[in-house]
Image (cartoon, rainbow, N blue to C red; front, side, top):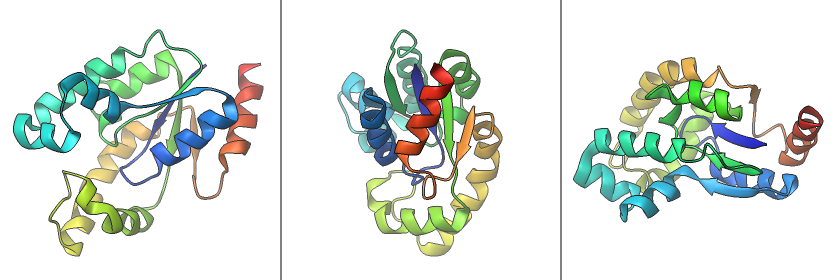
Amino acid sequence: MKIYLVGFMGAGKSTYGKKLAVKMGYDFLDLDTMIEEKVGKSVYDIFNTDGEEFFRKTETEVLRSTANLDNVVISTGGGAPAHSENMDWMNQNGTTIYLKLFANKIFNRLWKAKVQRPTIEGMNQTELQAFIQDKLPWRAVEYIKADFIINPEGFLPKNLADELKLVDA
């Protein structure tokens, strides 16, 4: 089984994904890390020097390169499902899980860690709230296509692993 985790930035895809992979006995991959390895730059530097269009093109290429993997949990970037029909592709090539948080929870998480994210670096609170209110609804249109929708704060990785093992049996 190949599992793709989707959701807005700050939803906990990497943290949750690592724990889920351990519970499943799977490998864990982070799509952003794979992109950094391919390009030889950090996501931050890619955005700043090559632009978002280059990043999204590379993101789609790297995502597609996971097609033949198995027994893996893959954490995607927050925008990945909303570009290049990536969500439909992930649904055809694996099991998708949307880690759904409300906008206020996302804001609280991102405000604490915004310097680590190139698209929101330097935003004040009002700008960050506006960014989330602008991006979340149109990205959620893709996120809700996922096979499973869970609240990562209320559904432990162990419980999800048990559910997924039943589905895969």
